[in-house]
Length: 78
Ligand SMILES: [Zn+2]
Image (spheres, rainbow, N blue to C red):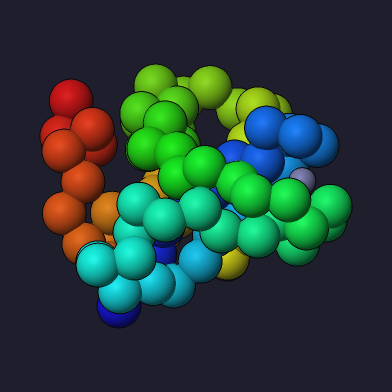
């Protein structure tokens, strides 16, 4: 299952979820404030641009993009 990243617009918390592709676009409950969070695809681009400090990867560290190693990510090929 691919990993998707979600951003809670309420508390600005970013988190990752393992989800089947069919549920990728569904909102996910924020683990911090339990409101609906939207899926975001900006993480890959942010990482590849070298912008640090803006995001906090939850799963592992050191790798450039955990999402992309698992599945296809068009934003990362830039
Ligand atoms: Zn939240």
